[in-house]
Amino acid sequence: MRLLGRELHHPGLAVLPGRIPAAGPKVRRCQLSRTATSTRQCSQIQPLAASSREAIESAAAKDQLTADFGALSDKIEELAAEVKENLQGTSLYLVGMMGSGKSTVGKMLSNILKYPFLDTDHLIESMAKMPIKDIFAEDGETFFRELETQVLQEIMPFHSCVVSTGGGVVLKRENWGLMQHGVVVWLSGEPRLLAARAMRDDLSTRPLLARTEQPAGDSSSLPSEPDSASATAPEPLKPEEKDDYEHTLQKLEQLLKERRPHYAFSDLQVPLEGDSEDSHFGAPAAVVAYRVLDALNQRIKRDAATREEMRNIEIKDAGDIPMTMRVQQSPVPQPQKQKQQRKGRKRG
Ligand SMILES: Nc1ncnc2c1ncn2[C@@H]1O[C@H](COP(=O)(O)OP(=O)(O)O)[C@@H](O)[C@H]1O
Ligand SMILES: O=C(O)C1=C[C@@H](OP(=O)(O)O)[C@@H](O)[C@H](O)C1
Image (cartoon, rainbow, N blue to C red; front, side, top):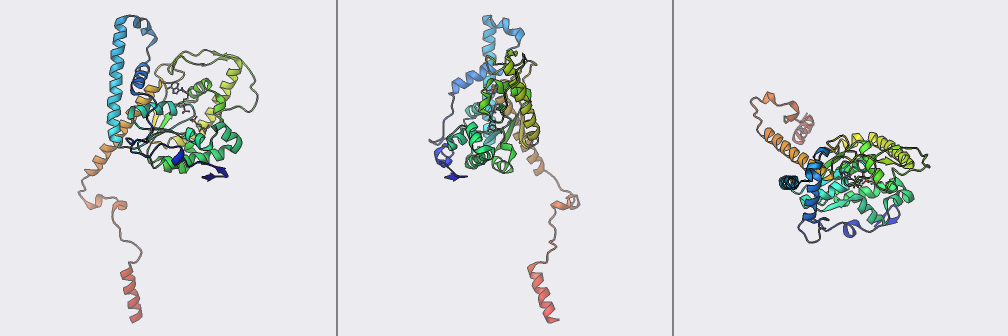
């Protein structure tokens, strides 16, 4: 396949897993084993309050912890089973800014729901056979956006998938037409949180955050790598990191300002913020996954209740029906009437 002068493999054949149903042999299996994920969910879902840390040293507290986490794990599974049944194969599209956790949370949801996981950025890289930063550098953002839409077109016919999209996917109207075959979930976090996360990753992999000018250099204390994907106190950053952080934060603030109205079109908005003030990196990924499931469940129930309400509307008087709902006589003459009118005119 050729796209804008570049020879490409047909992604439907070369990149994407076999067509759904999910039980089909070609569908890519979830990336984490069930047991492994349950354990990760357990250890992340309820970060311990600092005050309870000492108590954990005791065997009794550890037992309690295991019991609590077991219960939470069961709760997630129960919720996931309910959501999955109600979704009836509808795909989930995760949208949100760079670093909002679309890939991380997406993989978890894929594992919990037993839906295959697709990442548009990875599919684009497979199509173009080069990393995203090189696509931006060699062919520009417009070309990248073309590939992004093409990948979405390829994904659209699939059902029962969890799709992690790129942060800018919401900018094109055409992409919305494609994503709305599924439920669009916005992982929504503030720039400070996103910047803190972006700083732990390699900034150069995200071309829109990469710096073109030389960093100035200054000193201060800012978030650095936590020991797990959960809340930790920030550690001092080196001067050049501080400068990078300021630049990243500014860039993210500007992008979010432009994009917020687009993200707001999503079916659901799920916050990333953690419960405690020192959660610089936001709530743990498993908690966000739980929030997504919970939001989906509530939305599905609310929609069902609205449908039921509409079905039970009792119309006592035809005058109660708003004009727009009544069948109105067309102002355009009917063909039969036109014929009669013509005949009448001839006779006359
Ligand atoms: N809930 C979380 N808490 C802390 N760090 C997270 C969380 N979710 C993701 N991360 C980290 O943030 C970075 C960006 O996550 P990623 O899933 O790649 O985001 P996206 O796909 O939206 O760009 C990664 O380093 C990832 O490990
Ligand atoms: O926000 C954006 O415009 C982009 C986000 C990136 O994906 P992630 O959101 O997964 O980082 C990637 O698609 C590309 O660098 C552009």
